Length: 404
Image (cartoon, rainbow, N blue to C red; front, side, top):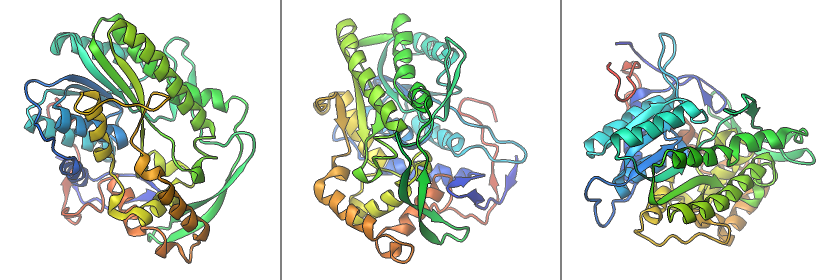
């Protein structure tokens, strides 16, 4: 078994290796942070499909679904295996840890590794639902953030971009040097090219989510009362130009329009529901790539402290909605709002004041930098309490269900 001492090597917020034990413990910490339900799930549990289950909100949805709803079913992600020279991706190790939790909880959860955009994966999932889970799927949570998508019908590959629309945008952002010293910079992002919006919508809009529903419906595996939620984000006015009003924002609007279309159709065919679920801010591998989001999130934590809700607590509320423990109460655009704590007027006003005052010299007193920097490292299994990083660790952890 390949064992070695792992130290963090990174380029900005991107780390080259992941720590298996750190990833395992971070998943265990998320599991403990998810509130226990007042009434423990009984029986075999609903059959659920989580697409994008290995990171961020999707991982939180998987863990919260296990604890709050007692789900069984299928979790899909796309991760890289370990090699002789490199560790596996962090999501690979997090998936192995999630599988251990599901097994301990007595829940039959199958983990598939592959391209969720492909029809091959959709067929594999439908086959599993038919063969292993009685041919009926109760819930689908869609949480996919990807740089590219190949359309199965045309073979065309689309690439998503994070750009403002109409003109360049200048924003503050937060970076750390190799020693972890913070710096506040201004960065300019050029405007979207003519086809950038179309490309981003093709990747991050609702096309693939709808294709999943079409595929599973055609296979006849959607249960009566089936519900589906696509996870999304709106965010602050401080980041709107690059996010909600930019290329990704158009894709999110397309996702929400898709939800309304699916909701009407599912209501007629299986008495079902489709919604988008708007989550609050969090440090994720996707969010750290967006200019300004790192600074905003650090300032938000500086304002809220422990009142900043982690993703697993947010997604616990979604599962309560989907399973009927609490009433499903979307807003006027069929969105479940789990971000109200973040967008409260007093919170946003306090963050805006700190944003204006933020410089390299002042940022230490305005943002919770220790928390933010540790959160980024924890995405890859580093800076996790209780891990001996001086000890060798086995890196060739098998995918759940595979023989070591």
